[in-house]
Length: 392
Image (cartoon, rainbow, N blue to C red; front, side, top):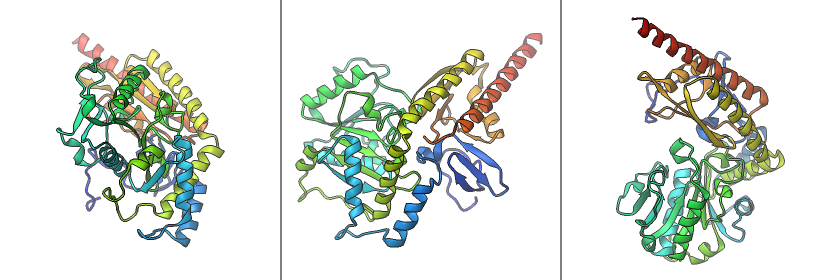
């Protein structure tokens, strides 16, 4: 695609995808591809879910966009649903377009209500695509993997702890519950608040509604994105009742053209309903256990996988390096030959698996079979290469 800016860090592997259904993509020749990443981890209930397609069509025919001075009732209805699933009943929400916007707004609110500027997060967090998070004076990126003491954290200066419960920039690492409890206790006892970044870990991805449900915490603010719109660009910030009351609406202003658009709110409402009525969150946990079990079987059979970890349908695979070769790159190439969409993290030995929560047992079997074939071929190739070098 000569007229498209490619800023994503790798080449566009399949520029001819014209149709999608659940976890399958199709090109113009009718070839099917198994999407184990649910787009950019967005299509939580599968590509082109018929219920979402239907409400998009209906709402688009009525009203898609509203101005600052008027609003459609669906926005309030969806807000109530979001506050119910987050546990922030009687709070307030604002609907936006992207996860980056949601995290940015959550942080602005946190600074506003506390009167502080410094923010605390884990060193491996991915906050947003905005460069504002690179301000070293305002951010403390704490290395929880190597630093087990919190004595060097100036809690009295911290406005908010921005907690990303499991994504870790795509490496899928879960901080210990005891550590998170200790940090949150210190933050709140010093007048700070807790913001949970649920852009990738929310909407049933980890086998619970949100990643923070695996911890003993109720956040003050939650940023939600990706799976909330199932591919449609809608995100949300949900604030507790206390935070909403602490906002000075005379001095705090935030506006962009598409906040609280009825089309986005309608989609979000339907996604929540589908997750509930089809019981997909419980299914996510069960399917994740099946995939992890099979991946660990493959790990134990071949000597090229270091670790499999995950919660629900957020799973990571770490490969080892053998004789200077990237096993992950070789396995990735073999998977792509079998039309499995599963791109490794750039310049790493890690794959991240995030299929739609609606993935079928048939597609799980296809993935496991293809993955084992790829690992087996790479294992045999490396073994033969080593044997050839020994003979020389």
